[in-house]
Image (cartoon, rainbow, N blue to C red; front, side, top):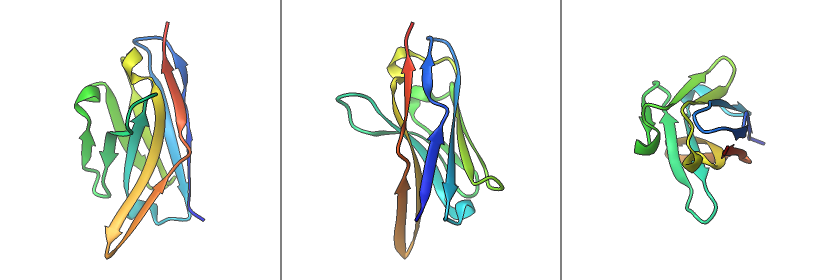
Length: 118
């Protein structure tokens, strides 16, 4: 069974930094587009950042210049470095693995809470 396990969430003050990690198992990690999404209370889940198999990155406007997504295919892990955190970044952050060639393969982690508060 495919597993995506996130870690690195927590409580941080405004202006602080966190690094989220997501390690995948039982998938051919290198061919997947990996993404980070977030969902704040009362809001829909939204894309934060995405990195393709050829390391093309996409960011939501709200996080451009502050967040950086990266991947290490040797470790089956995707990272989200979050700097200059704001209270509005508070949400549950989810890792996603997506691959479509003929069939669609789409997997989610369980989520990790990020709270930005003084």
